[in-house]
Length: 391
Image (cartoon, rainbow, N blue to C red; front, side, top):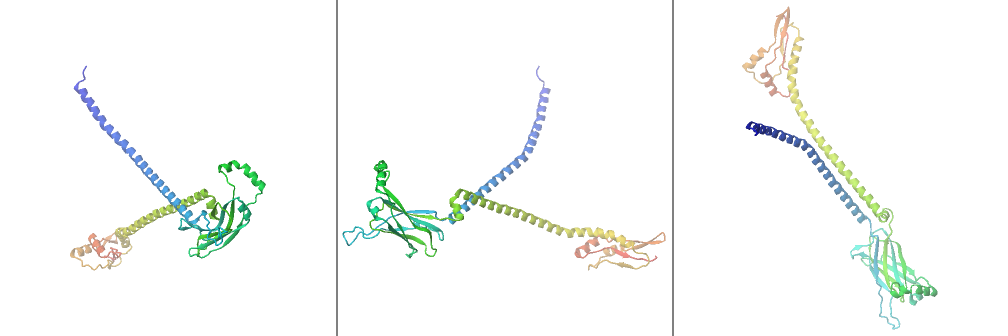
């Protein structure tokens, strides 16, 4: 059985009825989800801003600690090779060396920056690698002299120390040669000694004559040297000792301290900015309220005055015929209409039950408005007090 046209129309109408409902449902869902999505987006934005601020403060704290460490900590150690030279133009042919070995050592880093900081004590030692040759064994003690000088060539100080090879008997030397013969044959070891000469235990550079170099001289013409090195070690005390001996802990404490200090400054600045804005808005609101108060008072004065007039009139006895008007002079000529209205506002006495009753008529609104425009600062009481005697 085929469906009729009416069934098709009913189905179409049903579909058309469902369409708006679905659209309305979708709109409600979107409206319901829009508010949480906006809040989530705001929260994500705030979290991103907070993370960026924290990273920025951390990098600033790290930079401040690095700058402090670089400027506060002097050079911990300085090592430089020492090259000796001597004269060979001897007048006597029997001597091949005519002078003591001398070396000129620069105490500038990269030829520009000073190695030693003013007031910082340094330990200066000279290391000599000397072969265990018969000449050095027969040499005995020898003298090592160091003379630091300034940029102008002035002598800053003079230090002289003695040194010698460590004694080893012939039997010990023979046993050592036998035991270490494989390494000696392959070149992995040598028959030599390192002689360390401490020239200064606590050398402090002078700020007026900073040291830029030193002359090192060995007072022996027959000494034999493989190589030599000059070592300069800083003798740290106090905070510098902690920074040098415990660099990681010191860096952690320093960076966290800077981070905390900067965070505190940012928080206080943010609070001060918010409080300042609130105070400014509060002052603006108070000033606006103060500006609105006179208008409210002027608006409230008229009904209060009109309400008080009958009470003042009722307190008056009807014993005299005199009428006194207390309307302030506004300095404006009254027109005929105003005079007529004024006459109508005059008090009247009527008899009721053997007593005189005083009726008060208020001034017209036009008169009040005209007087209010001309005298804004004057407190006006627009009523008349009338006393009448027996009529």
